[in-house]
Amino acid sequence: MIELIPAIDVINGKCVRLTKGDYNTKKVYNENPVEVAKAFEDSGLRRLHVVDLDGAKAGQIVNYKVLEQIAARTSMVIDFGGGLKSDRDLEIAFECGAQMITGGSIAVKSPEKFEKWLQQYGNERIILGADAKNEKIAVSGWEEETSQDLLPFIVDYQKKGIKKVICTDISRDGMLQGASTALYQKILAEIPDIYLIASGGISSIEDIEELEAARIPAVIFGKAIYEGRILLKELLRFLD
Picture 1 (tube, rainbow, N blue to C red):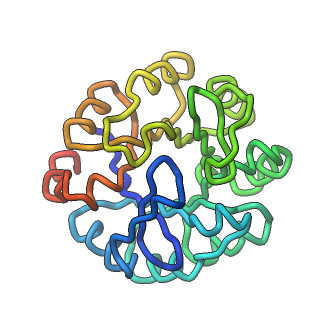
Picture 2: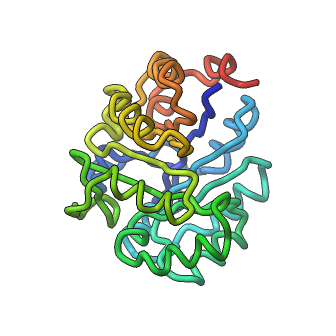
């Protein structure tokens, strides 16, 4: 059964979504992210992906109070990302209730630090963020593309101990045009034992079914829920 992971993206303490990572496309869906998290939990969902978009831009954790409030008022297992650059950022995230953190830009720009975190906290708590456009890694809130190829990037970190990877196809994120299933199948064909979390483009319950049929371990989705294209009750069939 595919693992379902709803996403809450935060700007100025509010639940928002962007299109293709463009901050100019910001749309506020709820002033109170805790309410959103509680609705997810009440529907039977157990995991949550929280992204500090202000932090991603600032290069340091910003919306840690939102994380703290969600963790205090739900029992959801939260992974947190966005702007985690220093040891103190990580400490704050864990102190505020994150069970896992996702590192993307840091894994590209400061691999020694990311590897240190991996050794210090273990591969159950450190997730690799592999955000890509045309199979090239992008960083800094997707505002900066690199020359690094996606597959070798993941393979290299798997050799260093990474078990879980969130892979977002930026070209599809927030577009509601379907997941990059072929890309995820390509990754799993080369790295079959990685715990691959698909992200970006989910537009309907059929997209989730397609990923499950392709044996993708987990999926992150957000905008489709907020736009009413997926109803929380529709997700019950995926929950054991």
